[in-house]
Length: 191
Image 1 (cartoon, helix red, strand yellow):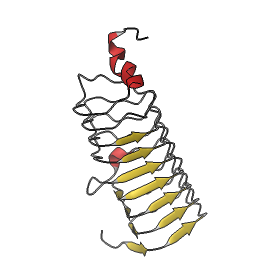
Image 2 (cartoon, rainbow, N blue to C red; image 1 turned 45 degrees about the vertical axis):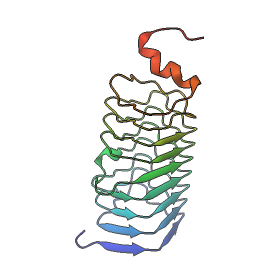
Image 3 (spheres, rainbow, N blue to C red; image 1 turned 135 degrees about the vertical axis):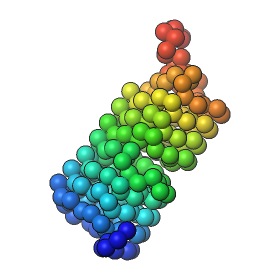
Image 4 (tube, rainbow, N blue to C red; image 1 turned 90 degrees about the vertical axis):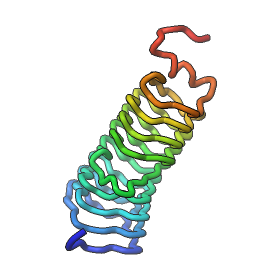
């Protein structure tokens, strides 16, 4: 990035960035704790090896934002469009996060982890979710359409429903209790 402000190995705690615009900043190995980014414009920033803990990023704008090996823990990230993030080295992991109404449309997210997350009404259409782990996640009304789900682990996920014929699911893992979500298009009763 040209003419960027560099922040390296910094801790940001209880900072209110809500409804503010931050741009042309590079954050390397930074920790954000209890910060409010709701409705912030974080476009054209770069976050590398950063952790967000107990933060609110709901409705944040991420146009051309780099998220490289970024971890989100106990965060509220409702209605965020990750599709517009920079694709180069895009790598995110989520634990105990609320990501309802967010979008990962067409994102390549191989081996990402979603642990104990609410993913209601999330758009995963045309994304590459190969080897993704949906551990104890609620996927109610999540959209999977032409999504790559090869070797993806749904064994402890709940409320998912998608058509195996229009998604690539080779060697994906499911629990027996999750089978109704794969057969819903056939309008059959499973007891």
